[in-house]
Length: 301
Length: 124
Image (cartoon, rainbow over all chains, first blue to last red; front, top):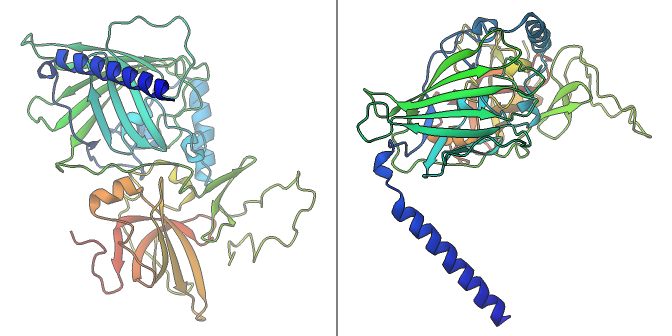
């Protein structure tokens, strides 16, 4: 036991030594100051209540996403389902991660941590999202398991040649479905070959304003779609960071193809008029009197 | 009209639920918000959604309990909302986007919640 403890001590010491060496070599003066907490720069949301992918245009069809006719039809079908009270293509309601590029709309606050080899983008939303932007000069892997946040390679650019980096360019590939751009259910192609390019830079006149020019290349689009997102640095010296764990406060329940909303005491409520009760086909003892009150009227309690 | 909930007249809800986006707000009737007045049974300070469990008296004096979904703690806390901002027994009134089904559920925004006497829940 003593020998094992000794070995652990040596391993820890070696690891700390490595970290120390790395931090000594890290000249953070070369990088822009992106410390603190970033939230979505508030802009009027037109045509809905939830932030769309392109903040400069209205929600839904107003986004004028350059979808192919096939995917425009998929989107229209999704909108019809949402008009009836369903979730359509937006899977985050089932606790799927928003994924790239939608996660960069910042439905929750963002923290950026810069190291020479990797820049981390941390967003606690539905889960603890940690995008890893590899800036160590690596090439694309020949094979990679797709993920909701994908695999990102970045490069710091000194655009004005003053010896300090101004822009972080990022390309993200290997993205996993199902994803949508925003809560209106704007779809991606099902082939999982989305590529997202980003240019992240501080505003030249306002050091607390960060911009992200995003370009999406996807086979559901007729041409690449470019939008500009902006983020505001919170003023709090010690910002609040809280967990975001989807399973804890999730009231939206999907049974088969239907979604229901939990009542205060844990029963299912319909989300739309005329919605059928859950299909209990696999229950050997269905409770025909299990619904309290009149289901159709929603008078549950 | 059922009990003490009323249509919210021409309330601009452009920012209601704007930061949520855990799920689509399609299940809530965003075009027909209502106002509720009642007594807080419980305030669930959970992510990705907080919940106000509100008992609202009906016209006949019976109570109906509403499950009202709000923003995430991480977003509310920046506006000064904590788990003790609402306590059981608090009497409040708020604007709600109700479930399209008419069942006692809906969505609320922190800027649209007040104490019964009109005072804000969190001092600005």
